[in-house]
Length: 111
Image (cartoon, rainbow, N blue to C red):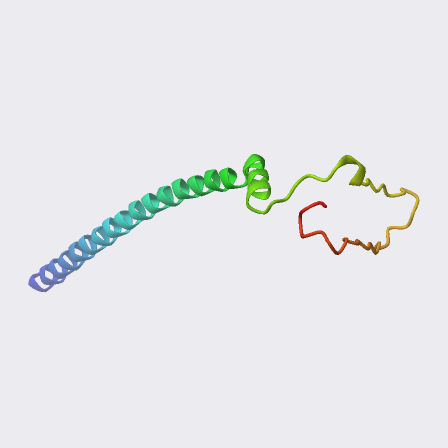
């Protein structure tokens, strides 16, 4: 009887230690999960801010202003604009295009 009591006592001690150990691991995992959740929220917030910043930098009016003021680019006159249409019946092969720029013009500046 004493031997059975000792075996049961040690089984009880080991199962109690196992329970304490598993609860400790579960708490640590939960804390880690919460920290990762907070990091994910911060990353989502930063991503939203970066998207907003990107849309601000890529606004058409801003790009046009920089092209006009800093790069001295201008919209070409209507008589210098040529619209090219593709023939629907023509085979879809690569088309070679040649652009000629007068020697006196600078890049982006009309004469």
